Each structure stands twice: as structure tokens, then as C-alpha cells.
Length: 331
Image 1 (tube, rainbow, N blue to C red):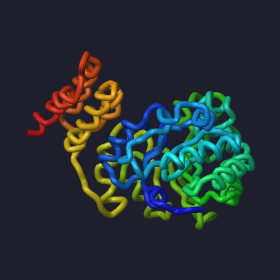
Image 2: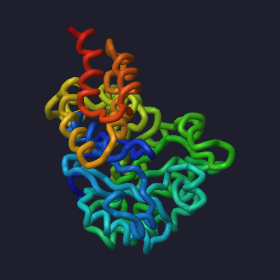
Image 3: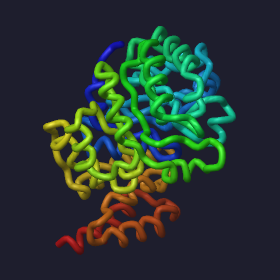
Image 4: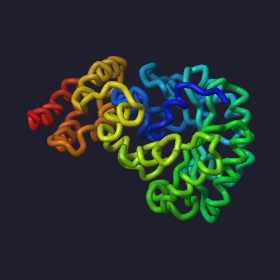
């Protein structure tokens, strides 16, 4: 399978998160890290084939390296959607075998595919044949009553035999019966050790661990113990500065380190362009709420944005006024 910038960037990635990792979020994250691999929200293969592709797949060139996550279980549809994604310029296409939401189960994709590794193998084989960019898989360690110590190595063996050599593994089971999607992110216990064990079984595969990783120190520990990559989800979204501002220096060994304030200023032209094209300020700033988390003035920043972004004609000046709540306390 081809290796490219996405494979190198997968040393530290931001997880695909429904309703969160849209193009505005990714642009913000890219201003914080030049090197981390970014993912889209999951997009279903039928939506790409039949829907508004520019709306679903459009992205800013600055977001690269950027991976497209697909949902589906029909090999022909996934191959077609992967080809469309590659033509749009994505650096990687990823198959979702980890999402536990009800709507994903009803469509026979997401975590429920852990029960059918042969179908997953057929899907990725079709995708690989259709594109010349990496095809990867994001999965859980198992679902429901499955024994992860048996299921996960079998899943990795069958799917890698079809040509996938890079996996991101959420180190929790998905309980498809009895737990909500939100509960599935917290209640099933983490088993990071099992993911580490898989690296010993499959040394030729690029394996990233996901789930419950809340700091760069924790990420570095996994890398030091032999894993190839770390994928961070909610911590990167809720406290992006704490995760991403120093990631290039610490994880990738180089790059420009910016302050959170500098990132906010760099977002202003992007915000102005978005509004000029008919967008709303809140569509961008909702992803910026946590940028000052843990710093003096963070509460004032959040409060001012929350109270003013929806005002008629709200634009970059609202962001600057909110920023004043932080800079005044830092002076």
C-alpha cells in the first residue's frame, strides 16, 4: 500500500468526531500543528455518491495532511466513494469500523463490522483497488460479548491480508446493545495493554492507539513503548491548545510553536472570508471555545463569545473583544 504524508503524520492524529471535526475545526487545528494528521467527520459512501459532494467533501488546502473517513459496508459503493475522495485530493481514506451509534448500526457499518472481518476485508480490498492513496481502518477491540483477545488479532489478520497496513484502534469494546453512543465513549473499560500486545503480534503493521488519551505526556509514553501512532479525540477538541500547540516540537521534532492568542489572530481572516460567503460566526467559533482552557480569562472568553456570536452582523470584531478578556488578565 502506498505511503505518503498521511502515514508520516499518523504519529499523532486528531480522531474523526461526528459534529465536531468539520472544516472549520480542522482549519483551527492546522494552525496549531503543521504535522498532525487530521480527519473529517464520517461521511457515508451513499451520501458521497448521491449527495452534494462539494458540501460534503470540500476542504481548505491548508488542512492537509487530511484523511477522509467513510462509513459503509458495500464494497462497490465504498470503492466509488474512495475514488471520489481521492479525486478531491484527500491524503488518505479511512473505513469506520468503530462508531457505535444507532444510526451507524442500522446501516450495517461502524463498530458492528467487527463481527464480520471478511466483509471488511472485501470492502478495503475494493477501496485499495480503486485509489492510489493509503486505505486505513479505525476499529474497536471488539463488540458486545466478543472476547477482544481473540477477536482483535483475527480482525487485524484478515483485514491486513486484504492490503491494509495501518489501523487506529479505540481501546474499548463497543456495547451495541444497552449503551448509548455517549456511554460507549466512557463506560466500557480501556484496554491499552491489548493494543500494545497487538504490536508484538503484528510488527509489520502501523498501529495507533485511541481512547482516553488526554495529554502529550501520555501520547509520548505510548510511542516510547513501541506503538507507531497515537490518535487523540475529545481532549484535542475540548483543550486544543494543550494538545496541539506543542505537538510538532514534542512528537514530530520540529515546526513552529504558536501561542493560543496568535492562533486566534490567524483565524480572523478565515472568519471574515467565511462570513463574506454567507456563513455565520458561530459556525467557526463553536470550535474555539476551549482554546484558552486552564488560562486566566478563559471563562470570560467563552461567555463573551456565547453571548455575542449570534448578534446581527457579528464578525471578527466579536472575537477580538472576547480575546480582550484573556489579554487583559495576562498583561
